[in-house]
Each structure stands twice: as structure tokens, then as C-alpha cells.
Image (cartoon, rainbow, N blue to C red; front, side, top):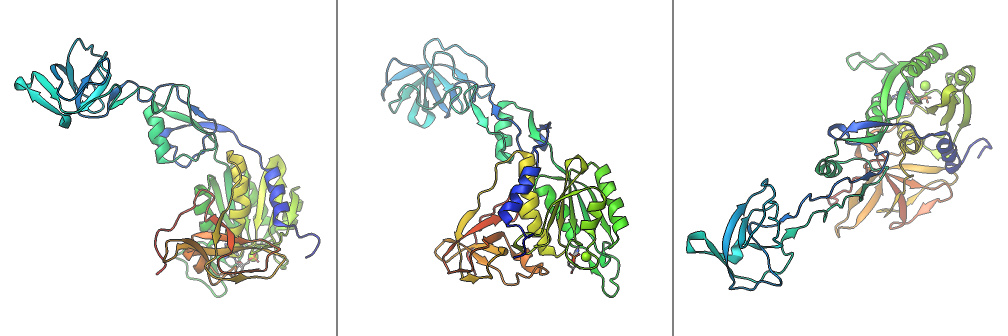
Length: 416
Ligand code: AMP
Ligand code: MG
């Protein structure tokens, strides 16, 4: 390994150290899905807000357990939405969710009762103790309780809780603004354009533009340039003018004659923090800091190198910016033996599945070459084999990461 090739862990440390937490903004709970909570949410209210009935039945009171056979006058009726009522003497017919009339402390379900004297009285057919079938105020959430931690990626279940607490807006981390610049004179953006000899379609640009929002970023600029340093530099300026704090480029960072990105960055006064990491795919990856602390990830152009660079360098940086703790991989057994050459950390297109016994396993897919995008479409995870490991037996545990840092789908279908 040449001296200027960094281990992944060292390179990642440099990326994390260069990434700063970004500001926060208010977000309505109607539009907060996928946003990251910036501060903990402390409930200002009790939930439920008042003692209410868990059943359709009769609300009652007593000094001790009321026994089967007891007969009581029916004093009133209380439905969901009815306000404060003061019980004077007997039983109250009550509906699920209705506020308990003051003075009553228990509910007997309607099926454990019998109406007497054309409805004016009720007989209990079962014992009922104090507190039975009452949902007390604050029993779900007490006022002052911490209900959601900072760093929570907001999901519909959080929206349910926030809505129930009457929280209309929450402070969330600003989405880091990202620009995507693809390089390569062979690239064609317009899908209706017929390919000339030697041309290919740009797939990295649409991939990055699709995946970055799922990773918590806002894509502010997408552009394709030829292998032309001047065009690249002016595209970079447009990206900066669009407010990009991260620039992700694809292509032109290797050793070829047209790999102009390193020199172009030098001319712009950028500080290259590393170039080349001991990983596969994506070894020529470059990381630089532009003036104003804008981060530039120069990903090699092969599509899987782009996917790996995004997943294992850009997404960890986004986590820092969003205020989310670093990721812990899942350890999952390999369904088949796997071997690789040592010295490079491998990021493998993989598929988690459940075996015939219902056990979770991960399969390294065929076709790991960095130009092969079809296996990525079949993948639902990344398996990572460290640099110093060269052979793993079937059943060995490997580190598995979701396709995106917010996504870890668990398969439920058995292997065919
Ligand atoms: P480069 O890193 O520029 O040498 O590109 C490496 C390989 O990736 C070449 O085969 C390129 O044609 C291919 N490639 C570069 N950019 C893209 C892109 N945006 N979409 C698809 N393939 C690309
Ligand atoms: Mg190129």
C-alpha cells in the first residue's frame, strides 16, 4: 500500500472532524417526516388530559370493591366529548374515552351489568375494584416528561405523539445543502437523446439526486460537465452560489489523463485533506475543504464507487451535521463463505434474507465490480469486510449497513 493511501478509519475521522453541526429551524409536524429533531421534546401537558373510561359501561364509586349483585340508581350519562360533571349518588352510564364524572373512580363494562326497572337502575354482575377500567390523567405522558430525544428521525408514530400533545411545530436540524457535479465528456443527461459511439448515460447524477434527500440533505444544484477544468470550476461556483455546504462530484479523481479535479481544486485554493483510501470500490476518493468550510467529496466515477462514497463518507458527515450519533452496524451471519484480497476494506453489494428456519442471514451478491449497477438494484444492504480480513466462512458474522443511513429494511420473505 502506498504511503499516501489512508485506512478507512483514518479517512473517516478526518471527514467527521471537518463536519460541523448545522443550525436548526422550526418545522410543522405536517411536514416533519424524515427531519431530525434538534432538541428534546418535553411535554407541557398530561396525556390523557383527564381521567376517562377505558370501556363502554357504568362509572361508579365505592369505599372498597363493589360486589356482584349490588344494585345502583342510574344518575346520568357521559359520552366522549362531554365536559365536567359532578356525580351526586349513583351510577353513570359512560362511553369509552368519556371524562369520568367527578367523584367516580371505577368503570364496570356494560356486558357485566344488567339494566333494571326500565333503565333507572343497574345491577352489577361482577366485582369491580377502585381504579378498574379508568385511564388516569398523565398515565401515558406526564407533564414535564421527556418524550422524544434530540437526534430522533421523525416518523409517523412521532407525529401521532406530537399531535396528541398539541405540539404544532418542532425544532429540527437544517438540512445540509448539497450540490452534485458529474464530470465526463462521455455522459449524456437527456434520456431522449440517442447515444453516439462512446457515450453513456449519466446514472450517477440521478442516483445522487435521489439518494441525498433520503439521507437528510437538500439538493440545491445538479450539473454535468465535460472533462474540462474550466467548465468544472464555473460549475463549482454555481454550486456555491446555490448555497451548497457539501459538493459531491463524480469522476476525474483517478490517475488518468483527464482526471483534472485535484488540480482544479488546488487552483481554487481548496485544501485537499486526503486523496486515496484503502477501500474497494472507490479507492481514489478525494476529500477537500473549500473556503467557507464547504466540504467537497470527489468520488471516482464508477457507479458503485459513487454509491460507496456516498454511503460511507458523505452520509457519516451528514449525520454530524444533522446531530445524529454515529452508526453501529448490525452483525449478521454470512450465508456463504467469502474471501477477498487483504489490505483493502471491501464494501459489498449484499442481500439480507431469512433462511428456511426464519433466521436472518446476509448474502454477498455476485458481480461486485464497480461498474456493475444491476446487483446494486438487487441489494438491500452493504456488507463490510475489514482490510485485515481475507477469508470468512459461511456463518461468520459480518458488519451490515442499510442501503442508506436512515434505512435498514428487515426482509420478511424467505429465500425462494
Ligand atoms: P472516472 O472516475 O471519471 O475515470 O470514471 C470511471 C468510470 O465511471 C468510467 O467508466 C466512466 O464512464 C464512468 N462514469 C463516470 N461518471 C459517470 C456517471 N455520471 N454515470 C455513469 N457512469 C459514469
Ligand atoms: Mg471521467
